[in-house]
Length: 259
Figure 1 (tube, rainbow, N blue to C red):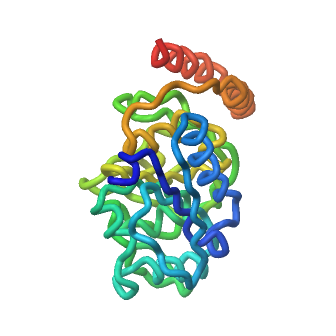
Figure 2 (figure 1 turned 90 degrees about the vertical axis):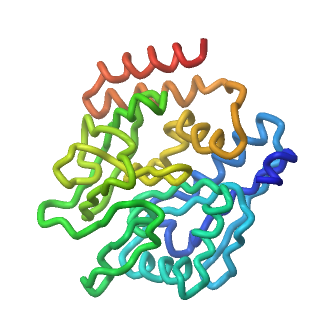
């Protein structure tokens, strides 16, 4: 995209007044800061409910929320509103969506009235309400090896069951927690520059390599940063989830990537 090529990258935080329940707005801050630390001119735009959604940003962040705000957000991003997010993605933008945001980006989700509602179809997945206990607690995900990412940690709080279709792929396999909850043992959905996950945390504060994965998809290769504090947090969270073996494996992969 032209502004990224010129050194300016705009990160759009969509509807934090609707989808900001679990601190996911922090993901936009992380993206902008990691760009600025590398010398990019990083601009963060907050788009509130009722505001026009710009289509020229490089990265869009969509967070989690309750059923009614989720449905309202979907309306403001859908065809009736001109499909601004789809047009942005068609123009080369990247999207990070968490929990309710992930569900909105799929083909369908359950609205506050319990009726199936059309999503934006930016990801090939559908979400229904689960019949079991709500998924709450620490979650550990081993990303698809092709992504070159270390083990991811987060916190999940949802009742949805998301099934990934053939047009998309999961983010990774769940080692602790629930994730998509459809029996596949996976979390998240990804297709091209669009990525969704059930990991709160905010997920990018816990997993800076995932932040760089999103950024690299629009700006290219990035110079490494000192993420020692985040690595210590990852180690602590993996141990808290009872997965110290994953911690060691994740750090070994991280070291190989940095050589």
